[in-house]
Amino acid sequence: MRHIAVIGSGPAGYYTAEACQKQFGEECRVDILDRLPVPFGLIRSGVAPDHQSIKGVSRRYEKVALTDSVRFVGNVTIGADVSVEELRGLYDAVVLATGAPNDRPLDVPGAALPGVVGSAAFVGWYNGHPDFADLAPPLDGPGAVVIGNGNVALDVARILAKDESEFEGADIVAHALAELRGSGIETITILGRRGPHQIAMTPKELGELGELARAAPIVDSADLPPPDADAALDPGQRKSVGHLRAFAAGGADASKPIRIVFDFFAQPVAIEGEDRAERVLVERTRLDASGRAQGTGETYAIPASLVVSCIGYRTPPIEGVPYDDRAGRFANDEGRVLPGLYAVGWARRGPTGTIGTNRPDGFAIAEKIAADMPGDSGKPGRPGLDSLLAERGVDLVTFRDWQKIDTAEIAAARAGAPREKFTTIERMLDARTS
Ligand code: NAP
Image 1 (spheres, rainbow, N blue to C red):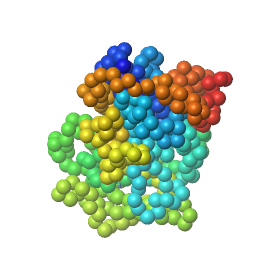
Image 2 (cartoon, rainbow, N blue to C red; image 1 turned 90 degrees about the horizontal axis):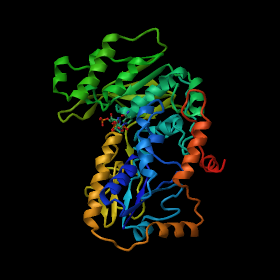
Image 3 (cartoon, rainbow, N blue to C red; image 1 turned 180 degrees about the vertical axis):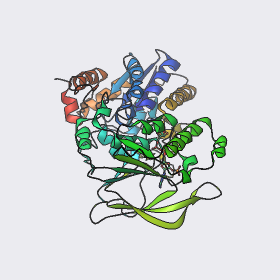
Image 4 (cartoon, rainbow, N blue to C red; image 1 turned 90 degrees about the vertical axis):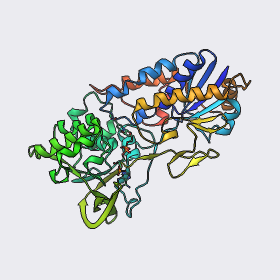
């Protein structure tokens, strides 16, 4: 028997559990630990609420979760309730699947002003993550700036731009929907420090901006390279740039009250305001020979009472676990961190790729665990963890408990929504018995 603990119940965690089942068959027991009483990590708290088809992958994780060899152990905080060292003593392999939930800091003067928020907080707010439910971002407008040219910037701009009817079928939480309903935002500026050929936006997600009910995307055709230059791009990138060209050619739809302005070759240098964000000071850039953005010295200001920084994420360090501070993830050699300690997903390779990218990651780690640990080590695994947590009075949440929380959230849904997420740990725990 192999006893495996996976820390984190997001896509990387469940794909690792699935891979261990395939690798070891009945000869393994996998415990998936999570700080929250609810599973699925990024699927629940990161994927946009109006992208329900992506969230459907959780049904696959549920199948894995409902087998005898895999167990969800929610409401357990690493560090406070049990340490990684203790888990290494109890399990043959411990896999860090903790994702990258912290924002990469925006390192400009004024970044700490009220009204400046990171995407982890902003996305967590509209997705009902208990850590960010009380964020109350200022939506009084009329200007908002979204920093970054990746898919998260697109998610944030789209959520800010949609009207209520466009959230039909979405599991955006009630507090966010109510605050967005009163939003005074008229101009959402998406700042890219490089140009249209350097965006990290995928075609489907970018195309959605062209289909919004009350918002029109605006691209200055002067920012676009000559059309022939697109031939050098990979097909996905070419499609994305094609959307930008269509936005530029279409001109602004003046009948739509909200403008989503793409401001390329523009890097934030400061955020200014009396006692809250009022404007973003931006410097024009040009690309140097290696394709990096270099400031030109030309600056201008964009009025903004809300600034959302969508410039990437970092994995929080864990005491005693080797950490690569520059990359913002655990130091590892193709997933191996220390003997018996592994990392997968964003915690291993940084915050890139789609949900599905984590699947081969999980399978690669299962193979490494098999190679490193050919036989039974006699470690206690599950019963050992259970007695330790019981001694410490930890109120652990099982997958069956989660199913009760799930049922209660579905029952609480407003008309047309798939669920109303509970946004406090207490409410989640209470739903087990209601
Ligand atoms: P990302 O794709 O890495 O994009 C980060 C953006 O921030 C880049 O445009 C980067 O510009 C910019 N940036 C970084 N530091 C900056 C700075 N100091 N000043 C200004 N700009 C800065 O990250 P992401 O958008 O957070 O997405 C993370 C991952 O999740 C990606 O793989 C993404 O595709 C995925 N995701 C997918 C979906 C979906 O499929 N629907 C939705 C959301 C997220 P440079 O290129 O110049 O560095």
